[in-house]
Structure formats: structure tokens, C-alpha cells
Image (cartoon, rainbow, N blue to C red; front, side, top):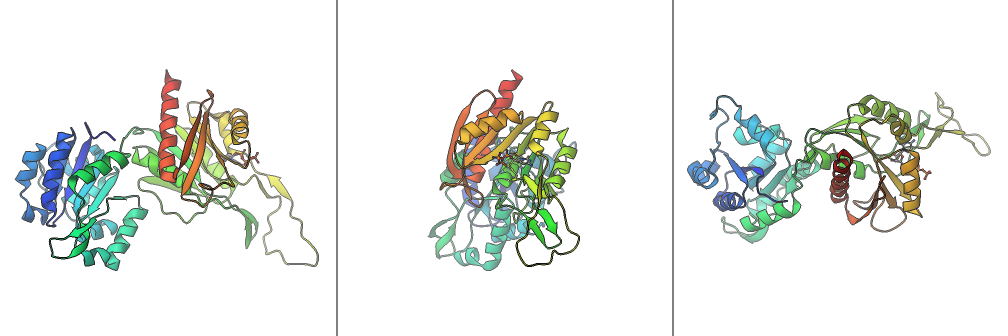
Length: 402
Ligand code: CTP
């Protein structure tokens, strides 16, 4: 990401590494970013707010109640206008507060109010960094979609040598430039994503399902939310944490998913159907548990409604994207589905190959659109693939508008 023109909120908490945040402010400003510094009270014990004010050429915030502009509420204004938040240095205390939803000062209040991606660069003593409470809190934040810029191992101001030293400002900036998907290019867009498997009930204790983990759909929902979209995630049963800023509707069966999707469909701009929806369900659902008998058992199945095809018929302005897992001839089958279901694009992946699939953290897809584009997105983390798919969708929507 090019940092020029981006609004960056830099949160500085009370550790000795606060001095490095001065260099960070200066370098970010030199890159053309509009830097707004929020300090905790303890950070101001280490470095004067005036230093940051001079380096950023913006007012520095330390107190929630010190409203500098009467026409605005500072913490909401900063939370809304930030393209990204960078916390450097981040103390164990700040991590603990954030992981527990505590908002008792300007920095933590603004952090709870923002939907922008948050990058956390921790700095603390090596034993604090290894403490189970800190590890648990960082895990929680990671699950919620916060991004970590790992501290370096090296000489620590407390005299220890080990992991806990704040990453150097140059490296933090390089990481932001490489990793930050903070382009808010989906602001104002409504995105509906479906994810996970469905469960089709046989009797009160049994159901048919599939191996979908939901990871690809959740990655898409998270990436779209990071990019500013208003995201609704219709999810079959999964173990995954809800990505930050995403509204989830939980469903079980294909029929539940159909109803949830139809209810939300009309006001969506982009609809991505990453769920592995059952094609068949038991023709009969038993109210009490089926008891075993001698011999085999035949359960009659009937077709479920093809949700994607239904949406293809209903579609007006929506950009509709399907997924298809194929074992062979993926592009040809994908094209067939794209046309038959009146889709704008389809992501096909070949299952039964290394480097992707249902439970994996990685995926590899081919993005096909209705104009004949065939874009190979080689194996990468599902979040990265999600962002690449969104890039393609945005390009196609822009082309459609012309
Ligand atoms: N899909 C759906 N409703 C269903 C079944 C599938 O919306 N009842 C959607 C999935 O969410 C996915 C796409 O359709 O986006 C998958 O296409 P589909 O043709 O159903 O794939 P398969 O089930 O693998 O079909 P086939 O057996 O024809 O390969």
C-alpha cells in the first residue's frame, strides 16, 4: 500500500520504546501520510506530546475530554476517518485492555470505535511477552482480525536480551507498505458472503453435511470489512471466530441459507457464495431417532434449491460471484456454471491437489468472469486470495460501469 495521502492514527502507549514512535511519526509524515497521534497518559511521561505535534503537524490527543474542535467528537472522528491504526509501542497493558473491551482513555475508546484495520507492534520485557495472560490476549486479538508486527529479539532497555524489542521504524513502515490492505475501496458497498457447510437433518441426532471449514468465506468477509464494506456473513455451522466489523447470520440447512440470503439480497452490491451448500437433503425428516434394524437402510434424498441460480435469476444491480470445487476440467465446468447460473464471476478451485481445499489455510483459485477473463491466483493464505478476488471484483465492477 502506498502510504501517501492515507490517514494514519498512531497510538503510543507507555513504554520506553515510545521514543521510537517519534521517528515513526516523522517517517510516516515524510511518506505523505496524515498522521494523528493518540498517546496514553503514561506515554506522555516518556515523550512530550509537543514532540509528536511538531513532527506530525497535527494536534496530539491524550485526553478523551479535551475536545479540540467543538463541532466534532474527537474519538469518533478519528475512528471514522482513519485508513489504518498503528499501535507502536504497544504495552502489555494496552493489549490486555483491548482484548477485554476496556475503553477508559482516549486511545482505547478510539480503538473500540474504529472499523479500520489495526496494526499492533508490541514492545515489552521478554518475560512479560511470554506471560500466559499476554499470550492469551494476543491470541484473542489475532482471532478478531488485529494484525501483529512481531517484536524483534535483541537488547531490551530493561537489561534483558530476548524477544520484546519494538520493531525498528523503517521495518514497521516497510511491513505496512507490504501488508496493509487498508485501502478503503469498498466503503459504502454492501457485501453479502455465504460460508461454511450446511447441515441437512435426518432425525434429531443425525444430519448430512460436508467438510467445508468456512475459512475462505470468512476470509472474504474479513477482507471486505477491512476495505470498508458493510458485510453480512450468512454462515453455516463453523468453529470460526466472527471477523471484526462483520454482521453474521447463523443458519443450518440449505433452506435456512436460501431464506437468509433472499431476505438480504435486494440491498446488496456484491454477493459472494463461498458456502458449500448441500445439493440434496433427506426427503423425509424423522421427529424421533431412527432405530436400527436388520439389513441396510435407504434414505431417499431430494434436491435442495440452488441458491446461486435463484439469485442469478433475481439479480438486478448485484455483482454475483459463485465458487466451484472441481476435481477435473475446472475451467470448463466453471464456465458452464457461470453461464447457466447467470453469474458475473466464478472462482474455481481444483480439489484433490496439494496447496488448497476445504480445511486448509491456503487456497489456489482461478477467477473467471463473464467477459472471458481467466485469472490464476496461485496458492497463498486464504486472506490474501480473498483480497485478490476482491481486487478482481472491483476491477470488473468498474469495467461494467463504463
Ligand atoms: N450453491 C448454491 N445452492 C446450492 C448448491 C450450490 O448456492 N443448493 C452454490 C455454492 O454456494 C457455490 C456454487 O453453487 O457458489 C457451487 O456450484 P454447484 O454447481 O452447485 O457446484 P457443485 O455442487 O459442486 O455442482 P456439480 O455437482 O454440478 O459439480
